[in-house]
Image 1 (cartoon, one colour):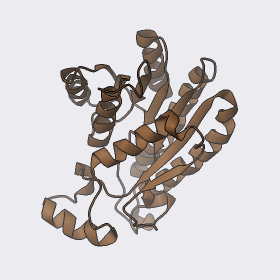
Image 2 (cartoon, rainbow, N blue to C red):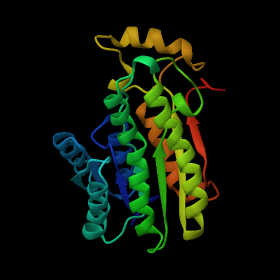
Image 3 (cartoon, rainbow, N blue to C red):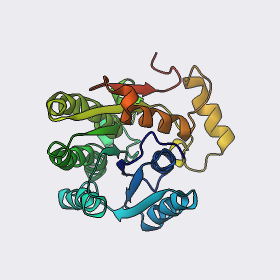
Length: 253
């Protein structure tokens, strides 16, 4: 355990998944108390247990990021349990899509946008409202190199949602910095998570498909994404505002 985030309260959404869990653990290892948020009750509980097993402090909360009341309750829970909210990593998201625009199911389009884009909007709406009147804070949003910086046929809903996150982040950053709230986003490339696999695909097949698209020659480790999130959340990046931090092994260079 180190003290980079000692005394800080960090909220992580999508924390039942690989990237969110890895970031939540990383925040706890560096001294933060972590509110672990997600839709999967068992996954949230497992992340909390992993943090506590390492001597960290955490608790869980269930949230539907596409529902404003649920998101408001999540932020209120952080304040009620711990007295403050200093850091938020808005990471909840789904992949979705996979079909051309002319064949895209409207319900699937709405589902992807409601979670990936509206979910970030709602999170920031309630987080900024608290942070701006309570000493400020830091927000990091998960975008993607797919959408914000790169295009792939068949991924219109996902790419649109993530491009929206990047531009929403920049707008909110300009608005909120005068209130002491510093906001940035990350745009990862392919990461070693279940989301990087096609149905029935083996690790070897996944790597053979994705490695040629990344000049570095491999997918990212979740720990590499978490390291970037923690840097953006820390005082080390105190002059970084409205930045979309690309972490894709050179794919969009």
